[in-house]
Length: 206
Image (cartoon, rainbow, N blue to C red; front, top):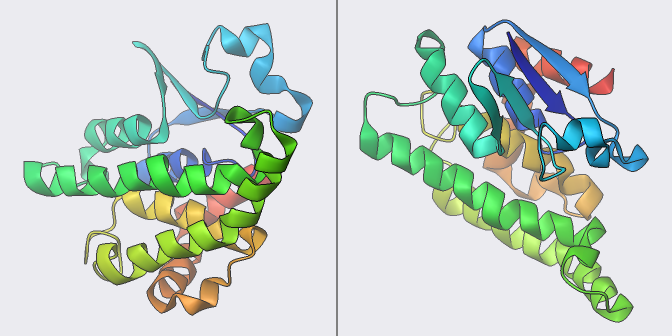
């Protein structure tokens, strides 16, 4: 049995969506980051990084959304969550996901996690002030150059769609008007109509 450790409001929503889309049997465990659940010894034994998500499998633990989503796509091929038969397209999907993880998520993190990069209070405030700009710039690139069609990869839904949805969900809180990005906004609404996304959101809300 797969077990996903996640936290409401976190990037782990992307892996939760992927699990729901996969059709695989799994259990979920909720962590409350504000309570410091991610730093408790029992969780650190599972994921020493003290972050979410973490997926417990019969072979061990997988961390990081990109790895979890790729794993789920491969063990549930019937769900067609990735272009598994085309190495180039699979790499393109992973490039999209890597941009989300390495750039978009980091931009967002400067709002509440500035202490990861500096102890200077003034610098932390400067980082917070920059978030609306950097998030808007990232989404302009996603809108204009990276979102291929109704879904991230074009006509076929993939795990990348859950990752984009998760980041787009954060935009209002980052003081970015999602409606200025027509394709992203349409994608967001399209995602809300998917039963797996509705189930994942219900789980997240508790």
